[in-house]
Image (cartoon, rainbow, N blue to C red; front, side):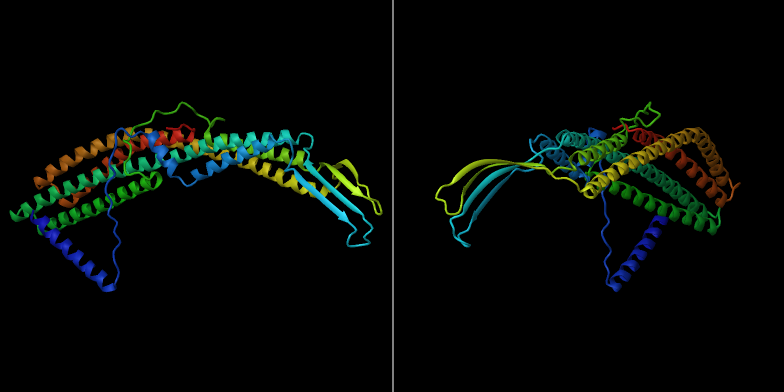
Length: 420
């Protein structure tokens, strides 16, 4: 307890010095207080993914994708290639020779589909609709990956924090024992200073572990926008060993290719669009004639030529289709590499876990023997501290491997496209 009082006074003095320095510089220390996230046992991983998806910025784009698909489907269902238009014309020589010439003409101009243009436009709308659904599933898969990473990072940070607390307790017990033996004249003052230094180092490690835990929880809150988290539950390892066609990311890449190729088909089928049909009445009165002649006319407008203009539109659509295919091929490479890395990492964890557990058992036994030897005066304190450091490191490695096995299982499931 004497050591605790001494350390408390030292820390208060240091805090006071820092506070005076900050006040003197005219700066304020930002508030980084953060309460630990509570665990809700009824809150499932799937619900957490729903919350994270609703909180993710790209979610707003999904509605726009769906609206675009509906718009193209509606356009493909139209009878005309573009909007009909009303045409009106009036001609007179009143402000010229004024011989009584007068003409009235009105009509409706109807843009016509090219052969296959309407079907291609409808196919593009259907491709956009499939792409919209694939984009929603791919985004959910991506957000699930973020959530899996942040949750298991919290688990790793919690494990480190728990071990840091245990190390501090061990250092405190040792420091108290050394101080008591020093008061009895059994050890030198150098042992007291060494034990106190070890205790302060354990305090620093706990502070750093606490900061890492809070940072991990902040990352989770940033992803989900929640003030609670689900419990850490180990996932069942997927039995898939390859990136299959229904993988959310690959399905979205394939949908993008289909959409781009449908866009190319639309460009090919509608590049000559411009043909139109004009139907309307006409009333005219010739010069020096009191009578009007009424008639109905039909005009067919068919554009021709302009191959240089057509090629620009088709080449743009062809480039978009080629880019989509290239992105799909790159996505296959990335997913395959990620799957292999996940499988390799999981295999490494399995191989290391047994050896690390045995090493921890030996280190703990060595620590018990070293404590007894130090109490009997058969071992120097610095050697005991080295043994304790080795034991803590061995236990930390096993704790992290146990958690990392579950983490790597989740990441493997993520790699093969399995959603929570």
